[in-house]
Image 1 (cartoon, each protein chain N blue to C red):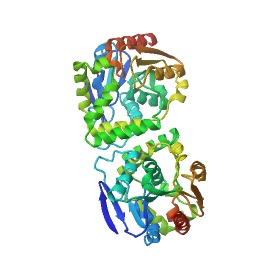
Image 2 (cartoon, chains in turn brown, green):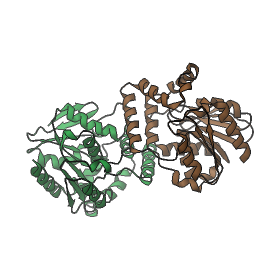
Image 3 (cartoon, each protein chain N blue to C red):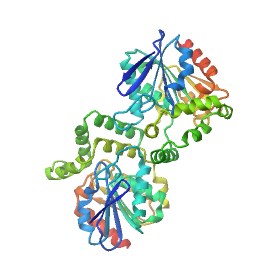
Image 4 (cartoon, helix red, strand yellow):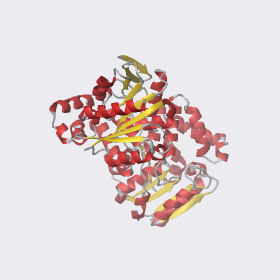
Length: 262
Length: 263
């Protein structure tokens, strides 16, 4: 594995033979959340992960950026590595980033996998609750916020599982208060991509955790219904973090999709 | 005039004896844009101005990371800090967005609301994308020739050609850092629509708009006028978006008439 820097972004290129497979992580995580996928796919594909601006090892001094910046960052990673025909996999925030990148530059992508995400922008109530979360973190209540957030993030059985929680909490703990708040703001500045999806005619896999309460299966069905070449997989027993909660099932449906289209 | 700190915010209290009149400035200006209103109203009202978080003399102790809600909460904190019972509040453009959210969050704190060259709608997707590009440009290239480009669209053509006015506005804009401008742009991008809640507002409201305003043109103000039961609408002639500076005489006249009618 090679660690690279592209501007502020920290990338991991696991080499590997075969097609390009890039993973874009969720909020408030880092590329480390893809460990079960990296291990499974690195012998079959050229696997690449990176940390979204501000999070993980992609440290910044200045926190003024939006969803558009995030999408530009993904495009710059693809262009800097001179990747052709990219298979992109994003979960939640990672899905928003991919959705915006395919609207901007569809020709860069061979396929997309959208896990536990949605095509709609934040509602007004959604933005106001993100603002309230930022206030909580600023006033020193980071742990309370994360506790509430984690409860909604994963299925109850995983929330109660100490080993799963230790791994999850460790990944989140490496992100600063500032980077978590700035990411919430970037999420709030995203636009709707729904009306652009009928134009994207590459293969798309839509995944949703059965018990995902943040972006429940009906939101996945909406994307499936407008993407011309798409299929939907529901991951049983999983909440929002389907790749970490049910890695075997997640890997199986992703591999099946990638084999079918290639 | 007394300068007061409300957390990160610098407040200018002109200590007049009448009822409080709080002014909230526009992007990318600061408290100085209200100079003509301060002179006119400070003998009859307790005039208060302040600099938005990160602007002018106000700092931010969290790396300029904030939303429109933070800006609205700042107003409520100023009112608390100065121990004001009720306030007449006047905001222009971004100031108007802040005022609307503050008023809708704590209506009981306000005796009237004045919105100039503002709107109730949030950014649409197209507006959000162009704002995002502007933020990226500010952070990459700094302020550059933004003030000149911006003023060309900001002001009524005749006022734009007035060198004294042009310099005055440009000097005020140049007091803000690129990071502060980017931070406030992000805050504007995170604002919510107030159209639904304005329907239920009972407060006396004055709505003003420059006849030649291209940023928040007349139809935006007309929509707010239709939504708000107790509202008066006035069009300021010979003015673009910056009505209190471009045509202070008419702006002050309408504001003065409104305030004396409601008291």
